[in-house]
Image 1 (cartoon, rainbow, N blue to C red):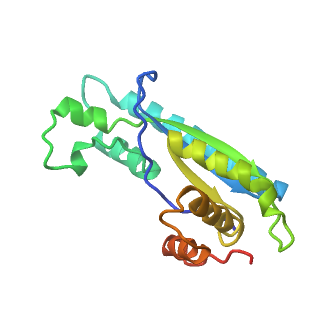
Image 2 (cartoon, rainbow, N blue to C red; image 1 turned 90 degrees about the horizontal axis):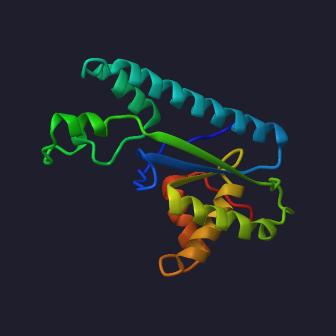
Length: 193
């Protein structure tokens, strides 16, 4: 069974891009080829759905009017919004044009990185950690990162704990500190000991 969680996607504003882009990196800690194919196919469907929703949005923009329900549904379904969205910040007084621009669906780039690791006590986590931690660093440099495994309890949790301990030693002094932090977001976290 695949467990997923929703997260708000941070906007990347790059002068080299013609429009805003949300970059999501999915790191799969899996060894089962069927699960890897399942995740890859699901990500491909998400890309296609996003492109379709952007096209629906574009088609609703005729004569300067916008069908609010199509825009809102598109944004709500993907939970991808520009942080300047005036509807979420009532103290900021934007013009109607700025408000419509803020609700425009962004370009979505999904990156997928597979870390081959079996869910067993004898798996060699240390052999894949350097690549996994580097992938997380790169993902966070450009957007957000989702690390998952089949159940979201052991392999992905172990990688996240290693990331917290190695990249944020000032905040996490021990394995138990990092595990407590992870369990705030993922109570079923049970890394292999």
